[in-house]
Image 1: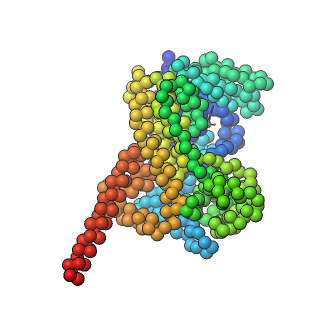
Image 2: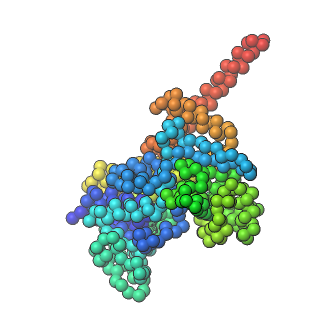
Length: 467
Ligand SMILES: Cc1cc2nc3c(=O)[nH]c(=O)nc-3n(C[C@H](O)[C@H](O)[C@H](O)COP(=O)(O)OP(=O)(O)OC[C@H]3O[C@@H](n4cnc5c(N)ncnc54)[C@H](O)[C@@H]3O)c2cc1C
């Protein structure tokens, strides 16, 4: 009988991984605590749109859905910087020396639906919404689930809403505890993973570290113009860098932009102290004067939209024997400033699929190999994402930073295949994150050494002629 995987969480990586496993002929039962996104439920608490780039596109291509996803994407060719001060002109900074290179703004809900539907094309994959995992018995690969009664109960989009194996949900008026067992459980249940928590309880010396930024985030909207058009440059990621905080905006296909304000939770000027409509209006008029006229719903959005927190999670190991494995944010949540969390989670799916193919008879070896290939890279990405927050909120506004970017692009053009800027390696290649970070450090060292040598030479020549 084919191996059976129980997957917990059908967010972005859960649906995609189910498709990969389904394609390999495994039996897959995917349990998601939320209702079916196709029933119009918002993916609450996470960003509305995201930047999809090369690593994520590659993972979607392998399963044949990249074109479908990219059809709804808006290319963003660079950063549009909105400097501080009324009347300041925006500055466009391309992402790469090659003007065709771009990242893609895509809607989270639509992408979530596409990956789930890709998984459901395989008859051996069943998706169960409204099933919350309460914990996993990691020795027996058995998930404990709660199935609250809901009008949206069932397995949407498939005919397989029946109980599976020893899963026995019944339509009752109270929450039904059930179990689902397989040969292995895979936790694709995000940053606050219940599967990971079960591993933490059971595995001696399980390493776990979570660290929160002092900043939270709030999403706001710039609606479309009266004719449905975009009210700012459409093909750019807009940034209002303000040193200790920033706002960004990504375009949506309906002509709107989703803005995200990243701001301190506490402090003299912060989410905590900005409560009244007057406070909010004053803050936005001082800091983002060009955006305010485009945000007619600012006060309502600010009041009603939640303030999210930003966490980095590192843990080890990501697997337990041949029974449990972690993927995506469950294994390595990162802050969103490199636009790579989802891209990395999709890359995990590709790597795990390769490892399962390499060791079809030895799942523990496959899990171990996957962990070994990904851990160093996830740690490197976590560091890069934290560093990029400082770059985005502070350095993008400075002339020196923009000069360095121009030098990067000049060297990339002058030394093709030899010099690659860090952003290019992370975003437009599949060079492992850790190797990209090491190579960028080496390149920066070489540039600075070169600049010092040139300066020393010039001083020497000057002294020669004057002395
Ligand atoms: C503000 C913000 C902006 C971002 N922008 C980008 C970007 O531009 N580009 C990018 O690549 N990444 C971005 N990310 C990161 C990206 O959102 C995550 O890395 C990505 O969603 C991870 O996918 P995942 O499937 O691992 O987890 P998730 O997408 O979080 O999915 C987890 C799923 O598990 C379900 N679940 C959770 N607990 C349980 C349970 N107990 N039982 C059953 N189901 C459960 C959840 O309901 C959810 O559906 C951003 C993140 C934030 C917060």
